[in-house]
Image (cartoon, rainbow over all chains, first blue to last red; front, side):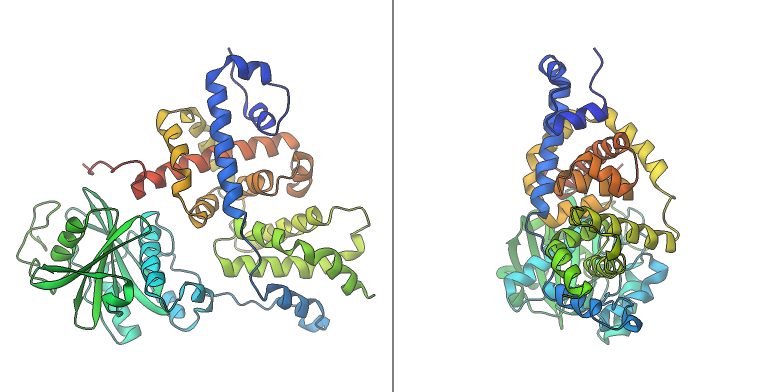
Length: 272
Length: 187
């Protein structure tokens, strides 16, 4: 029995009667149709609340009523996120042109925590400027040059790729370094911010590695954090708090786990 | 009433639809706003081709699509990916009914709207537009064929393949995000 073609499936999805007899007899095509319908409804729902941003209608009106010489669209394009590591310098624009990202900013700690989770999810799906080839040390050095506050980069283990990529994200108007770890339990992002843990909706969770640690849970992700100097190192992922704290302990250079301990993922000592 | 006023009265009520489509096509909010703005500026310059009875939304979306294609051409992107990706998507159809993909349906609700829209943006350009117009704008296939300047059969094929590809991408992301269990340790 031949199955429905793509076109016939599309017609059935649109409610056409053709194909109905086949669908009655063919569970495989019924399943295909149901799967397509589920995606269709989810996609429709995703856009259901999307509206043109406030101000866009006014800008268009101004453009339409401008003199012909002024008809060139006035862009308010924010800089694109980084595409390639060699283009990392482009991220400098993030420091001066972030109005696009202002909607991420919020005075509330909950919003800050939500942004941490969003950065992690961007890293997981390799969106938002994530780069596999980026070198954590160079990202940290670049951030130091741009912001005057050089965070220590998480320690990479190149043997096993425990750090398998980086990005420069915007967090509360600041460029911050984020580093993705590929662990046996799932992906973890370390995001280094200047805000104290209290401003990230995190609560004290005892001591690890000789330091106070904080924890929190937001948007299905766990967060473990440690404050070192003027920065908070946040490990974010869908792992348990203990696992995240373990990643922090190994990866953050100021903590005692590095460099004396071998990589917990491949067993080799760093730098070998 | 001036032409501009008549245009604004006819076209601006469709701003949300134009912006949504731009958001589906572009990789970021700022670019989507630019594309929407350019669409209205171009549409005004062509308002003399607009006649009463014309579906204004479809007319605007056709201008938006052409503006977007022009931009892609300007960036020397257009034409480099669609044939290859269409072939890949056709191959993906073979695994469409795997149990894992069915499991993905259960996790569709775990994704945020933003994540779904981002996954849509990963699809090949013309397929993304066909799927968006079919599923979100719920336009009929004849209208979409006119907007996208292809045959109706091509619209159906593109929309179907794009939807299958979107499902596959969401399945992959669900696995990465832990919605479908932990990934196996890399060997």
